[in-house]
Image (cartoon, rainbow, N blue to C red; front, side):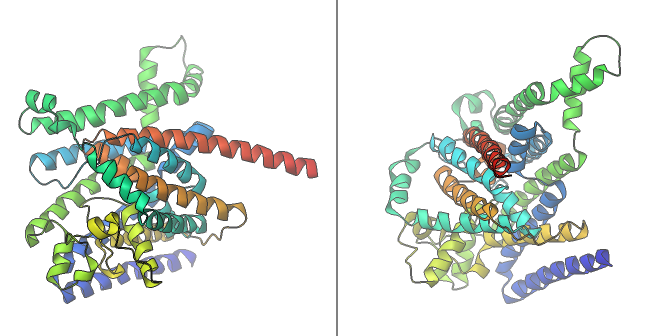
Length: 445
């Protein structure tokens, strides 16, 4: 009975999205651009929930209990997406644009890493866990939304952008002189962006994880079943065991990489079809000039992204309470504040929540979990930390790490370094907090 009820609910969610898509298309064919974002969001949500795919879980599990399976899934997804991105870029079908390269990426990643472990989910994890009914993740989402909106509406953030970030170089390895001279034509994308910026560092990361967290336990189990000492073959078997530690996560990672590439290809095709490189231009053609920035644009990344559209939600809400949210660079000049129902990237986030909800219902993993006590505090503080960190780094675990690395931007690894350090500090804090709490409870007992 429960299984049937869950299936019906999942089909209702899918039916609503189909109805919304048809209404948009009937209103104006330009809205097919927005509909594409909806359904790629659904695909991400289905896969994230299926693979329990979360960057916070990856580093928390690694540092707290030495389980590396999620790291493997992330690297798999990133490597596949990088290969597809190189192929698309070589054929002038890419939409990726690198971010400013600087120390702010490490700092922002550090703040973000602390926040995501506190909240129990990264930016993408917060969305898919909200779709599962997790109340702590919903609180974290609120923290992400309003911390960003408030921060970017200050003169301090404008000074950060104009006095620092906009003066930094934006590069991909394929476009550096040494790579482009050595590998002219399309080869530079596969060598610079894919091989050097993604594959080689990923292999090194896998080796570090294997030797420091996986090898000891694997060898102990393996040597019980064989005669003789350790051999190089045992290490190869161990590396394979690490890669295959969780088939579900690895499959999700592989499919996320493929879907991310298809997303880029489809959005570029839509831009060519409508003769517009940004959805803001289509909104202007439809007469919705109040939605766009002073440049006539809205936030329309053309690929998987999370936090900026959430900041727009915060700005939209604050505007309804009378705050001027357009006198800053972030909203006023760069991204605009579109009505929620005309925000393409926001529909991608809604799609992620809906896709996750459908998968959770079908897997009998959906449950409303109301946070209590300290979980309320961790959720809100974690969300605020992720929001602030994402704005400092100009991206989150998806936009500043996953996408940038796959696109050939070395700054993605700077964010990754900060995110790992922040996660480590946050895990150590939780260990201290838990030990202190248990000691206090035992003393009272």
